[in-house]
Image 1 (cartoon, rainbow, N blue to C red):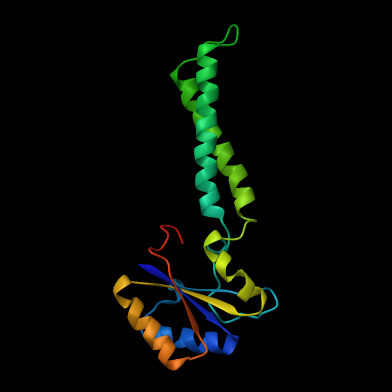
Image 2 (tube, rainbow, N blue to C red; image 1 turned 30 degrees about the vertical axis):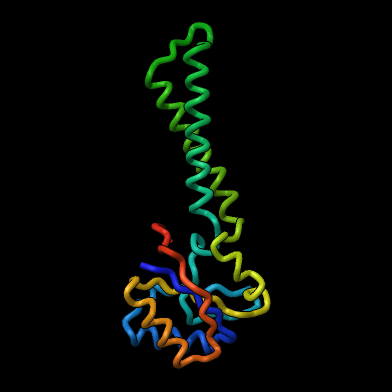
Length: 169
């Protein structure tokens, strides 16, 4: 699958393209619309929180950092154990997993507020009132979809593709 980006000037254009894509066999769940809060995108497939924010990337980084920190704390506790407490393998695993969970929670709280770095290049256009249409299509259909939209909707601006669709869009 490839993720294809189009900037559209109006919601009417977005609705027409979404309808055309549905007719051409692109499922609703593979289309995502991002717009600023002043633009009404009712009746269009809204991008999910994970598509609009850096939630998933932050979650992965936080989990890794928390896991490493928990493991480091566990190893320090093994080398310098507190008095009257025996540190064993179960404690190491528990501290490592606890660190991973804590890191994931903190990172998720931060990441949900951060805009998606993949969408950074569209930020100015979205603030201007344009609508970003993101379409996830099989690699072999990218050219077909691009040509179909360009042919029928001259006001739609093709903005490229991602080399591959994220594992968890």
